[in-house]
Length: 112
Length: 112
Image (cartoon, chains in turn green, yellow):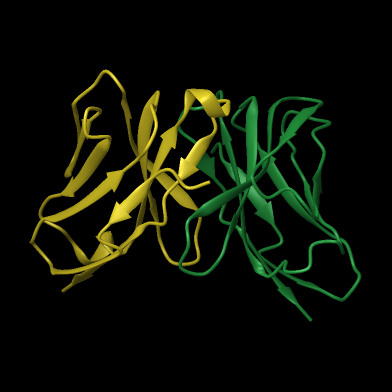
């Protein structure tokens, strides 16, 4: 079955630590996205990539970094510069920008 | 930035009743999409309606789009307890690189 896999499901970050969230898709989609969702809120775009080896900042990129070395993979690093990282992180992909997005089941990040 | 705004923010109905959720947006769009999110899970795409379409159906779902009023509605007929979820509209904005902008969502509770 095609889909998007996010791991881990739960992640804890210590003060000053960088953590990396994994996102893998086998849908052969060109576009991939990272969103942040705070409790009771909608989604805010962190980074997106429309093609391999290219990515763009979204609305709230500060304190985050990404890479897109393979079509299937779009990992997100939450750096120590992100002072309020506690949130639910969602990865998505689509055939191309603006079309229907397929989502993973998210990673919940908390601070220790 | 938040383009789509859902109304109401929360809705509670009895099983078998119809549920109507509305979405308003501010700028021109290529398409408008509706998604469902069960608690603690990723979003699931429901329907995409393009700017030149006025109505679309999928099973018990009916979506309308009025570009003159910059609004859309999602109707769920004969609701079931399993429809309990948050529902989000998302707009594809041509001036924003075809990125989706999500609203804050409507939290629907269907009581058995």
